Amino acid sequence: MSTTPLDALPLETLRRRSSSKWRTYPADVLPMFVAETDFALAPAITAALTEAVANGDTGYTPPDPGLGRAFAQFAGRRFGWQVDPARIRSTGDVMMGVVELLRAATRPGDRVITTPPVYPPFAMCIAEAGCRVEPVPLADTGAAWELDLDGIEAALARGARAVLLCNPHNPTGTVHSASALASLAELAARHGAVVISDEIHAPLTHGEVPYTPFLAASDDAAAVGYAVTSASKAYNLAGLKCALMVTATDATTAVVRDLCAEVEWRTGLLGAIAGVAAFDAASDGWLDALRARLDLNRHLLADLLAEHLPLASYRAPDAGYLAWIDLSAYGWGDDPAQHIRRRAKVALHHGPLFGPQGAGHVRLNFGCGPDVLVDAVTRIGALARS
Image (cartoon, rainbow, N blue to C red; front, top):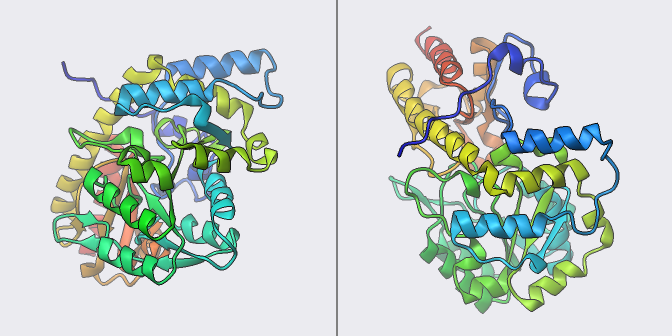
C-alpha cells in the first residue's frame, strides 16, 4: 500500500516563521540553503509541545526524559538496530556532541579525518576541540561517491587519531554500505583510532536503500565508534536543541558517561519532549509521508534540471533532502550560489564551504513543496539562458 506524500505548508504561512531560513534574506528570495523543511510538524510532536507550553513545562531537563528508551525503540523499528537505552546520553545538538567526544577521545593537535565535500561545521568543530583537519575526499566512481578507504588508511598510518564520519553523507546524500563501514572500522581498530559518526539524516533514506548504523556494522565498529544523532533534521526541530550520543561497548559508554555533566544539561527540555514524540511509533506515519514527498522531489529535481539546466550534474541522493549540484559548466565561478542569489533570487548553500571539491557546486534543499522547487529551478534556468 503506497503512502500519501506529505504536503508542504503554503508560502504565505512559511514566511511568518522566524527561523534562519525565513529571516536571513528578503521576501523576494526563495530560501533553499539551510537544512530546514517546509512541512507542519508531526501531529504527535505538536500535541506534546502544546501540552508542555500550556502547563508551563519549560524548566530544566530531567536526568531521564525518556529519550534513551524512545530512540532505542525507534532504532529497532526503523533500522533493525538493537540499542541499549543505558548507553545513550543527550546534549544540545549533534555538533556539541561531536566536539565533546573529540575532546574526550583525542589530544590537542591530533589530526581528525574528514571526507569532503562535507558539512562545513565539521572543520569548525574539529578546531574547537583543539584538533586539526585531515581531509580524505570521497572517491567519485562516476556513478556514486564512496569512502576512499585506501586514503583513510594512509592518513591513519600517518598518525590521524579519529575519523569524523557523515552517515548518511551531507551534502551528497550517500548512504555508506555496510561493507565500507566495516572496513573503516577495521582500519580504525588496527591503528588505534576512533570513529565519530554523525547520523542525523538516517531516518530519511529513500526507496529500498539499506541503511547501516555505524555501530551495527561490525564488532570493530561497536568497539571504536560513537554515534551522534537527533530528530532535528527529519522532524524539523533544530531550534529545540536536543541530540543523542550513542555507544555500544562498556569502554565507549564509560567515555560518554564521564563527560562533564554540563554536556547533558545543554539538552533543551522542549527538545527532549519533541524528540520523544518524534521517535514514538505514533510519528511513523508522518515520517513515511515525508519520505514519500522527498522521494518524489529528488526525482522531480532531476527532471527540472534536465529541462532548465541541462549542463548541470546531479545524482539523486540516497537519503535526505539536500541536493549536491555541479554548475561548473555555466561559468558562474567557484561559488555560483552568490550569482544565483543576486540575479535569480534563489538562496542556495555555497559549494566551496564544503571543501575545495565544492568549487562550482551548490547545495539545494528540496524539503519543500513541488511548486517551490519548480519556481526555483525555473528562475535559475532563466538566468542560464539570459
